[in-house]
Length: 501
Image (cartoon, rainbow, N blue to C red; front, top):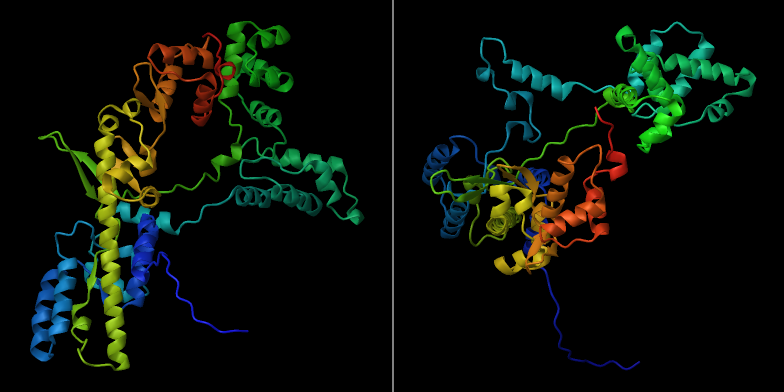
């Protein structure tokens, strides 16, 4: 094998650690960013929080430190740079919430002098209960009722198997034959015994739990209604649910009236009773958890000038700066391990703060362009939304589309019309007769408005909606209307039909 030296020229992209960190922070959501900042505070001693009235105390500490320690020219320069990065005018900094502290002792957080002699406010008590109270699941609720029910040990074991097979909505997810085959053959449990225990559980709260199909769920609830004033309506509802629920699901009212021999007012009253029932009774016990969104950007309208103001939410991230006391310990011509450790952490702290500042500056640039483009939405609502794609904003701010995608992912804007993800303001366009463009979001809003104002006795079909939009100069195919309608979770016209009265 012959060895040789070769010289090659080429181009390749090298991402520095600083650039990688800036990109990673750019795509983090608010909660993830808070965790990242807290992790940096724990790992880097050069970073510290800026708390209330801390600016004045930091000035005094710098004077005291200057009288006892010899600060070199390099350390003084680094201190001034860190102070500039963390000035009070930086709108990207905010005070850290007290409930997000790092690992500390109880006495380090809760000072005795902060307590008042009077009782604590109701709001604090409610907040404490909400954070420390566990939510019972449907199974827990059913097991609690089972423990209060006097049944044999044999029936109790059957009930435990049934409750274990009930989902969060109250549906029995396993058929009785499968439950029967799961028991030990030596117990000689009959299928009728399982059915009897199931009927017992179906009388538990919430009414209708343990149902095997929709008709059974509704029938259990109808049987529990004890109101003599609506006995006739309940009886008609039982007839519809028990024998013709498929026709009711298809809104085939003409066939329903022929089969049940009910007149239109009678059928309408029966349907009103059915619509008052809960097809998912288990959801009452264990409702889905609520997720709270912290907006990254606040958009308000100046009442005097009429212009839209954009600012970063000061509560999105803790307010941090470089610790001047530790920064002053860095010595210039010292290559010891301790000094190198301080130098490295000081440089990382400066990079981290600069990355945070770059993240928020980019977020402000992108948000400002979005607001300028979508003023119509802020003024008049969804129907005035303009078409917008990532390329438009990328050109306006001089960045790549991938950067814009990172900025707009999991970032939220608070406007007078609500809180929206930044991606919400981007949508494709549809051409109009006049040669203009209409946003798909605006078309969805128009469809929702037309359906909300339709005659429920004769609802609008997709073809009719297409014709109405064409009258407004918007050319949209019928299949596109169907796609938009389905994205809005609006059923087709035959399922939206209602009886008169």
